[in-house]
Image (cartoon, rainbow over all chains, first blue to last red):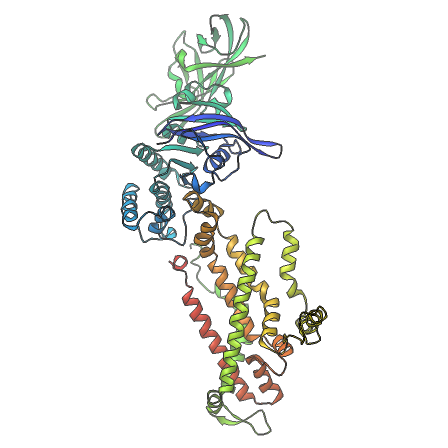
Length: 352
Length: 286
């Protein structure tokens, strides 16, 4: 098991900085995701860890040892590529054997390790197949097996599920996560899919424009996003206008169309300021409108099986998006009462 | 109706022009040559009445012709091998993403094809002749006393053939290498392979389809080359193609010339098929 530490890692292309002095520590056996839109530097970071991309500045340490000048083939990493990068002229078994041959593992031991890994990725009996004879999901598992059979220090995955269809993608999420837990290998996973990052990771690193916007557990990232960009990227957000009534020690009391709340605040506000409150759609509960409750009119409703999505209009004209279980259904034009617990709100900024 | 399973005459109409072209300019002439090769040699005419096996008997009875086929094949082999050895690094370099002057290099690769075949071959006689540029320069520098035999031999023919057929080796190999996913090399490196090993174990085997195509092209072209061998080989070294034309045009022996032509075609085809079998890529057809 290996601990990875990244210090002020920078990658410049000319004047442009693809990765800008990022630092993080990845614990032994931890599953960490680099999450962000394309061009945020997540893949470049992964490539620098793998050794495929030169480092402009900074350090990458595996168990304290700087590997920046170590060539890729000496870093002892297992890598899974977006397109799997299986060797098309080799059978499944030969693909798995490649890394072991490079390590000069003796034949009998090699066979044993391949059998063990094939069992692990549920591909027993596929030894003699060529990659093109396998489905996408099977190719994916061969790629995973090929990376794991060398028992690397670190497992790196570059958007490995991007080419799979939705159902298989969800199955593979669980599969990879379970496998990683069982093997206990330190893992860095690159994705632009927030749901993927959330379901699989111990911690998520959200990146924008070559910088780290937030590092935290999936819960932290989703429920306590440090800024609006992060909040927007990892899920849908409603913004509700509110007015600051009074300010306390790191808190502010506000009035809003959804009620009055006292919330922790990281930004400095003054009484009388207009601010925005952020709220996830699924934090809102709906019931039949009653006197004295904040209310809204249903503009539209969408049924998606497990959930109902509503577009709501507050009496002040603002629109809200609410997501509920389809227990009580409301139709277009219905008046509904809104319930949202104070701890699900956060304050995102002063509006003029 | 699903795409790819079209019925009716549509698909046949699409390949009809190519089929017609092949029929008129390949199948018919071959049939004609085939029939001609069994005709009785003529007396004062290109061919006589009736059919016979005498033309083939003459070929197999005379070791001169058999040796000429062997020589022609040997020249073809060497030309192909040298084209491969010279061409592969060029093709490799031309596919590197950071290659500078790519357009210029590409033009240079194609340049032999931009000059007419007769002019190009005469160019080589100026360079390779006993009084040619190379021999004169070497003599003037005092490196040699008598001219090196560069012309009127197999060496001269091979040099000139390599020059003109190099593009037919380089282009298919380039095509093959370009089709190799760059992440395969990265994957090999991540699994512990050095650059050299990644090249040997991944890139080289995966460029085999291009190598195969290039080798077949150059080999077949070398066997059928006429102008270059006849100008550079002169009267001393004759390839089979030259002998065939001699028989057909100079000595007017149409039946025997046809038999010679067919023997060359058949041997060439057999070798190409064997080569194809030997280099068959299981991972491609699987």
